[in-house]
Length: 243
Image 1 (tube, rainbow, N blue to C red):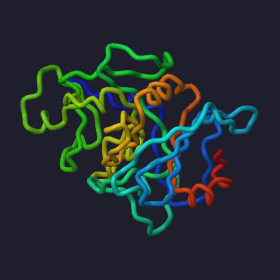
Image 2: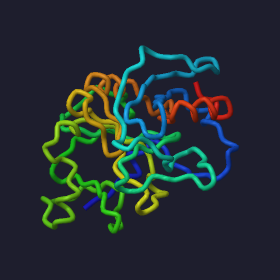
Image 3: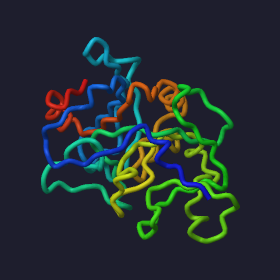
Image 4: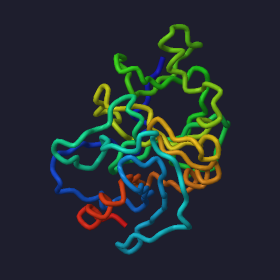
């Protein structure tokens, strides 16, 4: 049994109570998602690159889906306003804020990606724990045998669900600063029903957009995901040095 979640993350996450914050200067790739308000389940997504100190759009924007109940502040790099509600397990809201990205996961033997982006071909022995009572909450584990216990079977990443056949980890509430019950298993993955269905907290999109996104992400550029309602994006854009 081998646990190697930490090695799959590009960087760690940090939760801060101070608003003296801006995106890390070494980050030169960013996916920006904006929603109409905190209760919206639709998102507009756009890729940006930092060139000569300025954020420049790359390609055209595309659409995606968020949590059934919208958004709520998540645990990432960004500060959280004092007294603000923060994501909890099962709230059906996507975590908002600024997040590092982790590795890619999928059913295929190989995918198109940057050489330095980690990729795990998911098998029946790859587990991700969403049980808030588990000491492995929001952590990945590969075991050296087929799952035997109810806990292991429930945590299997491969459930025959095509929507999860390709995904990219969003480092919300991520190792090593995991808060039990603050939300787990947050990914970019393929949307359901052609975009007709919201999510339990992930950000989903058409398969072709997800493949293009994963192929574009370069860990050497410390890519970030910024997800905010329109009003909050406008509020923090200048101070946080967002596109």
